[in-house]
Image (cartoon, rainbow, N blue to C red; front, side):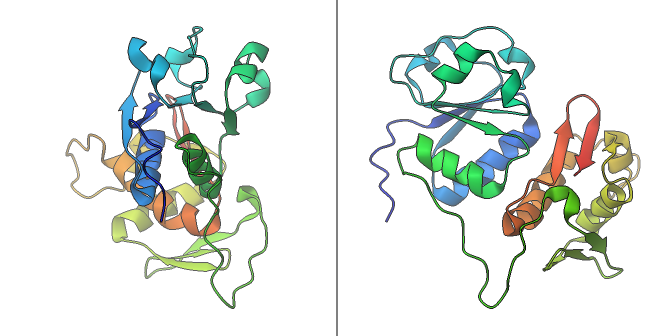
Amino acid sequence: MLDTTAINMPLLLVTDDRSLACLVRLECRELALPLEVAATLPQSATQRTLLIDLDSVNMTEPFAIGEGQMVAGICRDISQLPTEWQARFSRLLQRPCPTAQLRALLGHLCGRGEMTSVAPREGRAHTALSASELKMVMTEDNQLLCGEEILSLSPTEAALMRTLIAHRGEIVSRTMLEACLPGEGEAHSNKIEVYLCFLRRKIERPLGLRLITTVRGKGYRLE
């Protein structure tokens, strides 16, 4: 059984990316980890365990890290971080990151060691592929053929995936994806983020790859 006594207070995720927040929430729920999310770094965070989205617009200014504080960061290009930042983080994770790596990072931050990913299904050999090498095909009955996996999607999830696959490697605008949602003419609020979160959970977890990425201010891209 996992030792929860090492967690004195919830992990604080600092991000303005709703998709990342949704993904981390799902992983924390699976691991029974308490989590709080903030768009900016609060002044009282110097005593907290932190996971910081370094791509957030609010992370452009220097910030204080308490001595001995557990802090990790996620960003798209670690090599571009200031040297002093790299030295102060307990761990850095580059996006897009496999779900297994994110889960291991969360376990590491909360004192649960390096958590391992789930073993492949018995009798099925998995070939290591990059996201761009993975073949993805949608069938007429809403089945997604994704590498060696056959995944069942809801009609709305399937409609979103068809659009993403048709424009794979390109940025797909939010407007294009909203056209896939039921209820023409309705205000969809955050439905896009919710459905993309469902897709990430169904598709990315079995494969251990980050396939759907958010392009800030522009839309989404299937890698």
